[in-house]
Length: 67
Image (tube, rainbow, N blue to C red; front, side):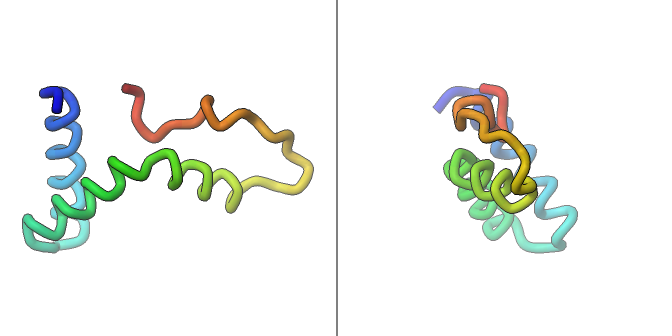
């Protein structure tokens, strides 16, 4: 993995650990799952929060991370 990818993963896990008051391993696992499934999560969140009248946009335009 690239160093930038690892640093993003660590920053996200620290944030999860701080906000959820969990231990280090659970926070790192949660960050890893979010990081690896960002394409699925973005599609789900877009569908959940969009209205019926909104125009569909290509999935390539959505991302949690700008990599």
